[in-house]
Image (tube, rainbow, N blue to C red):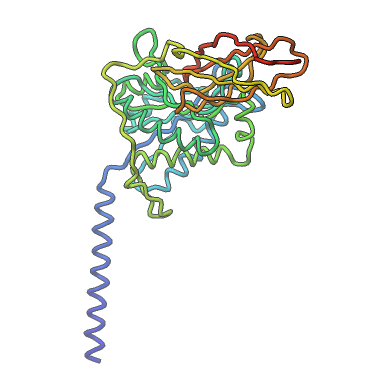
Amino acid sequence: MKNCIVSFCLIFVLILGIAFNIDTVDVQASNEKPVVVVIDPGHGGTGERNLGAQYNGFSEKELTMQVATAMKAELEKYDNVTVYLTRTTDTIVSLEQRAIFAQSVNADFMFSIHFNASLEHDFYGSEIWTSGFGNYYKKGAEFGQIISDDLESLGLYKKGVKTKLGQSGKDYYGIIRQSVAREIPCVIIEHAYLDHIYDLPLLRSANFMQTLGITDATAVAKYFHLSSKSTGADFSTFNVKSVSEPKSPLSKDLTEPDYCKAQVLSFDATSRNALVQMSTKDSQSPVIYFSYSYDGGNTFSLLQMWDRTKETQSFNILIPKGITNPQIVCRAYNNYELYTQSEPVNVPEYSN
Ligand SMILES: [Zn+2]
């Protein structure tokens, strides 16, 4: 019986100790200042200018809400993070109001959720816009690299991180400008193009908005080194690739790629393929797309993906029967969508 009492006491002390230790850990964890993330579902409300892009049955203001809601739910699985949305209903909220809200909750970062479309319906993939200024650029670009890579792994072509200044010399995009004015870093995540056939199959795939929300949240968790006791996810040692602060504000690239040259290496009469070698370089921005013409530049192919690690690549161009005098012209596009066009070249040993 005596032994029993001693054992009981030991166990009791042990339990107390464990309890005390757990308590200490919890107290330490809750003392750490939580990261405050504001997610901004772009657009909202009625009236044409509040809907965002509307193509192929998709409504941007609805998609942004679906992604933002999924992103919040996923991010809230992590410890030490507080998440807010700038709107939870389909209502008009001005860009200034969104930034004022972010400031009122002491946001560490504003993530503005969007989908894209282009005037000529020719671009596809994801792109990230951030401030052109100092530390705001650094933070936006460091996060932008993470989310760009993660969206690319879902199958969305990576257009990269971009900046644009307005005529006032401040950031062009209102949500970035309004956030930076309140000392809050901000990025616009343009996930995909609603008006391009390359992005549509993904956009239409099951639960894709949910997938995008989870992907965005995971990128935020990586950026802030978050971990989750409930899911076991742990990004506490995630390596964020450092981006340096620009010495002067970064505006958009206003110049086309430096050059674009095309050369026809051979023509195969059986398959009707012309093997073309194209060379291009842009000293400021990556070249990301190319297109080609076999009728001297009257009509061009859809934009193709250019391997941005190379300056010279070759590819086949199928020349349809009936073309009497084919001439090859190539275009190289940088990620600000400016292109340089090659001189037209003839196809050697061509027979119709
Ligand atoms: Zn938008």
